[in-house]
Length: 126
Image (cartoon, rainbow, N blue to C red; front, top):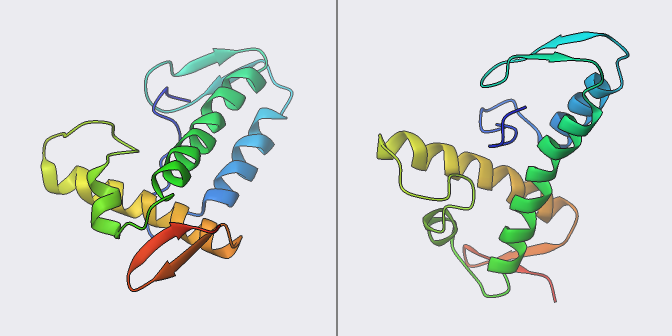
């Protein structure tokens, strides 16, 4: 539930499954929730926090779509730092995470036919 938003950069992660999972947890009527990172204990409903948390995914995807108004390679997209916003150390670790999560967005956008790929360049479908 961090301000950073969901991490879905590992091999088995899927953005749509992440969204479904967070919504399912947000719908649980319980008094206390324990989550990882930052504010670890929530008392009462967490629907608003979950909504804010998931909004990060949409924000990232909107930024990516805006960037893809012109054709870009994966390297050019990663260099924009949509996920991590600024250079971080260790550089290789954060660039790998950026590339993995951007790739998940690109897969999703290709699957929904919002983006096309031509000669290793991704572009928003006109």
